[in-house]
Length: 223
Length: 66
Length: 249
Image (cartoon, rainbow over all chains, first blue to last red; front, top):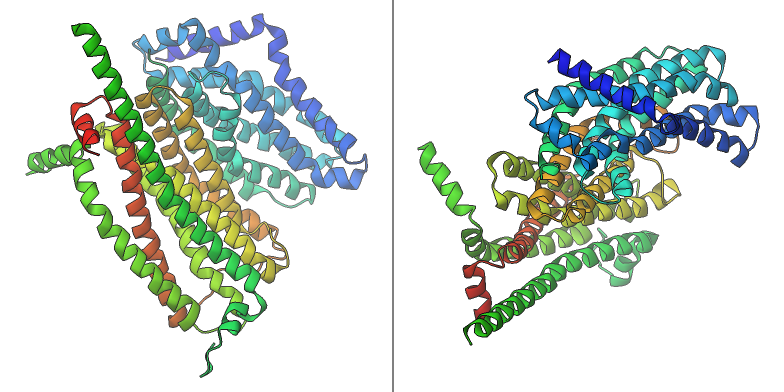
């Protein structure tokens, strides 16, 4: 089982690194959207500092959302998803491997580039750590919950808007607590509660979302 | 409205909040009506569709027989 | 015993049987809904005393709160019937879920608009990011997501199961969303004072509220049966019993 997990994870990572452009796109999108805000509002430090947590988190949400298609769509189209579902290994484990790969390829880069964006928007230095930590706890949830949405819409042609309609409302708790953690940390206060909440949501998503995704795939992707 | 005399104009005035109160009640009434009417229309549509399907099938079977 | 119940459920949930029974049931919901609605309106508009703080504007409560309750209630009904449909493969349950969604969305919309109409005189603005209004807004998005998914999958069985799973995922999420919105709201406590929930309510205000809520539930029951009957006719359109029935209409 562990072997199947690591095998699939390695395969997905290898495939992704073969097309590097696509790999960088969500990251570039993230940076691009964040840097639009100073242009749209004003390059004033006080204003941007107030907006920074929200702007960074909303951009992270959108960037993960746009990369979700990669999770199952291609596998569905070239038939390798059918192969996965026929394999003797539990589908939940395989789903988990795919979500892990997705997070390593999209969520983790966002976490790593966040300090740069924090600097762009004048997030105080002491809050940068919290920003990274909140993204570290939050982005896996986005991948996990997003996987449910993708698996439900995998057979729908041009399901992009539909996917966002389904998934974005479910992202709201992560958005609220993630952005607030950064906001509070900027004031130099403790963010234990927010981070604990994000951790709890992560634990819940980790245990339930792969199950729901597996069920969804059995419903929609079986031909 | 707890006085002994009841006045309709006062009732419709709603203590100055007439616009808010009556548009709320009006909207509620409208939504109730929409919810009643739309399944009735839908039913007519479905029945019409099934009737058309019946006619089509009869036509097809007659064509086969002849 | 269990076998007997199961057989009964199977029989009742057959579309044909459901169609016959529901036709007889609808008036039993619709008439009390109408009578209770009239009684509730009378009690709410004529009998209930004026609120000493909010004046007459509080009378929106008799629309707003039942609508908000219904919006939650219908979503939960959908989740339960979707679960029944997924687990026991009862098609009727899926039809109930599908038939409920538009009604639930309408009630959510009504709760939102009346909330904002109530907000204008109370808060001085049509929209305030109050916890309850925000939750209703998110709930409306959840309804839209369900309906969009349901209508974008061609195969009916797949559409039912996929949107059913979505509504179950949604119902697991609702407490989390609700909690985070409440928490977010207390953080940014500004203009919003808890205008909507009062510690104690006058009995003459409580009675019309409960009567209206009951009327709304019965109304929903009648409408959902009407909608589910349409679904049955449409989905079973190639069956002989539907054809025999339609010929007589």
